[in-house]
Length: 267
Length: 267
Image (tube, rainbow over all chains, first blue to last red; front, side, top):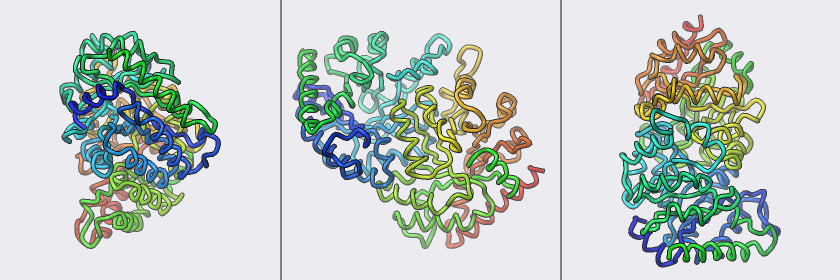
C-alpha cells in the first residue's frame, strides 16, 4: 500500500488506528483453546470485530515465534485473513548486515504480503536500506521508543544531538516519506512536537497508547498533520479489553471508541 | 550450555569455531533441491561434515523466515539435528520491549533449545534483561559489528566514548560473563585489543572472518584469552566453499583448516 492509498484509507474511515495483534497465548480469553489453533481463532474474531474501525494491523512476531513453526503458520494465516484492505505491519524489529536484511525483506514483503516491517537501526545503512527498495513497501525504523529502556541509549547525548535525533536524521537521508516511517512512542509526548517539526511529512507509527500509558489526544495534538501522518497502535487495550467470552464485543467497542476520538481529532 | 562447559568443549576439541548456517536457498549447491527440504538436507550434510571441527553452530533466522512456516520448521529440525553437544546460537538480533522480549526468550530458549540468541541493544535494558534470566542460556548483544554500516551509529562519539563503548559498558552492568557475550566483528581488528582489555572475561562472538574479510590470526592475537573467550564464526566461507557436488567435503576441509589454525593459536 503506497502513501497516497494509506492517506485515502485514513480519511475514508476517519481512523488512524492500528490494532496490534500481540496475541499472547497465556492471555487468551475464556472459551479459546491455549494453542496455535486458539490463537488463530482469537485473531480472526478480533479482526472481524475491529476491521471497520482501524486502517492497519500490526503483528508482533514474538508472540508467534514462541509457538515455533505452528506459530509462524498462524502468523501467515492471520496475515492472509486480514487481506489487502488494511495496512499490514510486521512488528519484527529486524536489523542485520545487507545480505541478511535482504532475506528478511523477502520473508515479510514477498513470502508474506506485509506492507511494512519495523527495523532496528543500530547496525547502520546496510541493515536498513534493503527494506527501502520495494515499491509500495515500507521500513518503519525505531526512532524514540515507548519503553523505559529508551533512556539507556536513545536519549544519550551524542555531540549536539541525542542519539535518536542522530538516528532519525541519518536514516531519513536513506529514504523518503514514501518508503520510510519512524517509530515514535506515545509515552514521549513531551518531545513529539519537536520531532514532528523536524519530520513534517513522515508517518510515525506510535505505540504506547493504552497499556503503556500514552494519550491519544496528546499524541494527536503534537503530531497529527493535514495528511494524518500517524498510525496509532493499540494492542493490549483492545485485544484483551475483556478476558471473558465477550472479548470480541469489547474489542469492537474499544476500537470504535478510538475511531470516534480520531474522527474528531481529524476534524 | 554454561560457561565452564563451553570452555571445556573448546579445549577438548581445540577449536573455537562456530559454523554459521546462513543457508541461502539461492546458493544451494548442485544436486540439492531449491526448497525447504533441500535446505534441511544441505544443513544435515554440512553438520555431518563439520561437527568434529567446531564447537558451535549459528543459525541465522532470516534465511529460514524467508521460506515462511516451512522455513521455520527447517530451523527447528536443524536445531534438533545439531543436538546438545554443540553450543547453539540463534542469530536473530531481536530487541523489543519487556513483554515482547520475554516471548522471544521463550521462542528460542524453551520452544527451541538454543543456548544463546543475538540481541540488538537500541531499546535499552528492558529489551536485553529478559534474555539474561535463564540459567545456562546467553544473550549475545551487538557491540561493534563487522559491516560497513557500523560506522553510521556504533562509532558515533557520545560524550567521551563512542556509542558502542557506551553500549558495552552499560549492557555489561546488566549481566555477567556467565550469561552475556558481545558481538565484536572481525573487521574491527584495530580496536579489538582495546575492547578485550575492557572486557577480559566476556566471550566475544566474532563474525566477519572469511567472506567479509576478517583475519582469524589477527582476531586471535588481539582477543584470545587463557579461557579462549572467543567464538569465531565462519558462514559462507565454509558452507559455500564449493558450489558443486563436493560441497560437504569442501566444508569439512575448510572447517578442519580453521580448527588446525585454532589449535595452534590456543597453544
